[in-house]
Length: 80
Image (cartoon, one colour):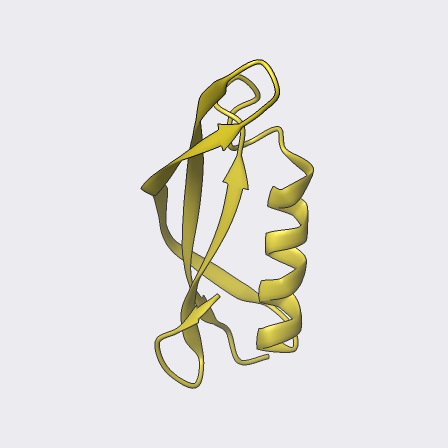
């Protein structure tokens, strides 16, 4: 999570391109972490794909390029 202020920030999570950002269990964990940060309710201000990452994984047979996709949720805590 990147904190942008006392009551706002951006939470990011990794998802597989074939599963999509809505169907990964990490989405639920991201919302749980936001709730804990806010100590209660929050509003989603914006969400969308963030900068991904590529890495090379070396194996016995050869190397593979692994592409990681990340999703970001910008939020603002709600007083309540």
